[in-house]
Amino acid sequence: MPSDQERILARAAREVVPGQIVNLGIGLPTRLFHYLPPEMEVLVHSENGVLGCQPLDHDAAPDLEMIDSGGAYIGARPGASVFDSALSFAMIRRSRVDVTFMGAFEVDQQGNLANWKIPGKFSPGIGGAMELAQKVETLVVLCSHNDKHGNPKILKRCRLPLTAPRCVTRIITEKAVMQVTDAGLEVLDIAEGLDVATLRAATEADLIIDDDRLGRF
Image 1: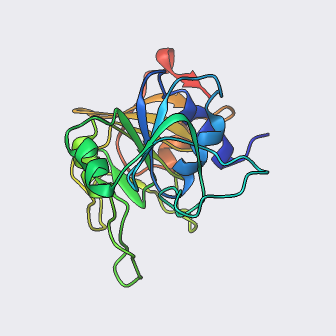
Image 2: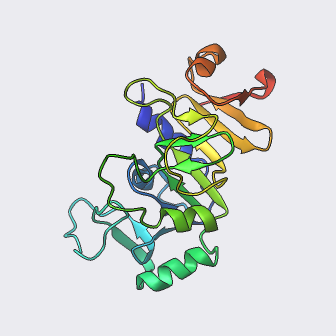
């Protein structure tokens, strides 16, 4: 039985299309590296200034200047490029990145994203998330469906400070895959063994569910 995080990551890997430039945000998304088929032709972008990241081999000595968004050491595939942050953010601002995966404290049915600050708690800053959220065409949120107290994180309206408004394309949790639409959150897939009533009870946002088209993961 996969863990909740393993379920999220395995499902998220199905969102990646060969030939894309993919950005992996801090936290859970950085682990998506390990769920992509090794033969898949994608270029992983780090806003630190690398295009063509890959996981560091277990027996390889790390290059202390090669890190991902969370500060972990990474490797580079053959043909990778390394450049300064100005060029890296120019790629983002010119919408050269195809898809970004981010975590979230909260996300709502309008596609608003809150993932950088909880008032009263230390935050190192918003980082590249605001730029990515505004300029990347496809933003996929990977997060737990509820917080550690059981409260919904998929809301009617975000309560925390926003990273960016109306930027989220799709949400993947351990319970469901939801597409942001003008009418609300359309549930595409639901976790194996979970019923619709339980999903609705765990979610504050309004859900659009067509039982005849509902997938499982």
